[in-house]
Length: 513
Ligand code: DCT
Ligand code: MG
Image 1 (tube, rainbow, N blue to C red):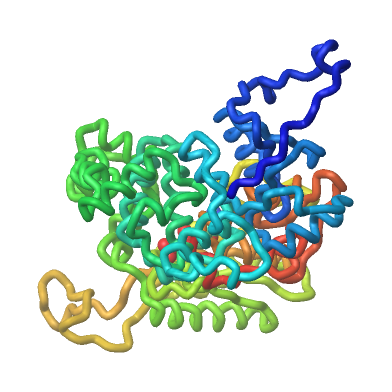
Image 2 (image 1 turned 135 degrees about the vertical axis):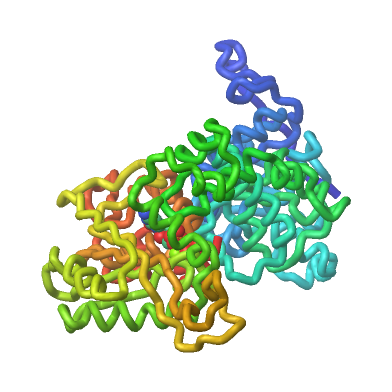
């Protein structure tokens, strides 16, 4: 049975002075006067709480910002019943039995229905699991899990490579890429965030109920999920895959050195395929793009873990000839446990010493004697005490090198992917062109660089968004700046950075958001 407290009695004085309007809450009309909601910020974060408060108010619910006497319903996310009680004690609340203590899934169900839904057992936070046996069926376990545990920030989730929802996330990534090609960042991020949420689920979504209460599930996203559940595929993603512009952009951007802007230019010129671009002798290509076309077949075929390990040995050996104590670490997808990648990312630092500005030049000079197919060295633009950039996707300021290395294959056989065109055994190509990024970091910035370069890109974006919105801090690949205290927070390890941010540590292989 639903237990609802009587509405608070408002004093005559307040009524006369017009200080209280029973019908309005923050500009919205109150439709459901019998319940007064308070949403706990603990573990939820300020942004999400503000969003939910606003949403509930817009739907006619009375939501209090403070835990006032009139509150009847407390909504919590990611908190157990004892944790809520503890928190209430901290607020000097003596008798907590006067509140309905509810999981966020109750509020999201209300939002969906547009009215208060019954306080079923599954929505209540209670002492022990035995008290609500309904939760034991797998399905309701799933819905209570999704509703109460999933943060909108991927840095508060664990995302391994074990993706139970690939059929959905593949469709979202196609949609996101198409919006990226259209330079529609908002829609692009909407789909990337949704994909990232579904990647973190420990079960496959099989019905719309499974996504109830999950963050980042807007209407566009839900439509696609619904269609895939019902039809097995998304007609919108299929339309994108068949779209002429998308197909051309997909090809063009697969060339090293070609981005959305260049693709747009070529598409407007009437070019549609990589072959047509290659055949067009009037185009002015950058040095990077020329290398991109020259080694196109090798570069579009993915880099394997074995190849990454082989290149890693080469990089370590070369760096150590110049700096024996240098630390060389594989970052990017391979550090997150991926078995294939489009490139290999390395971070290089010299513990205890000042960095050597010449190191990168010495390394590539050595490689020029037969190993290096292309390189572009970017000098450091870092300025001391530089406040981290506000722009989430801004390039960092480290000295770095975008290179293409010639990796000789130990094994040459007929099944090898690198046969020369003539199929003449004398001309069998016994090497593969591999994209390698080398990044040099001062030792005191190493932990930040490692965190940034390990990715995933979405994980990094969410870390920075979390720092900004939930902690009033600014994070980039160089530093973490506390805006309130106006200090830079030093960190010697990734664990310390998570601790500065008040986040549980997430292992590299759990950052595949
Ligand atoms: N990164 C960054 N600044 C850049 C480029 C990348 O902080 N200018 C981060 C984001 C992810 C990580 O470094 C590695 O980048 P990629 O190689 O593009 O991604 P990946 O996860 O390694 O994926 P792939 O397997 O395709 O290489
Ligand atoms: Mg990479």
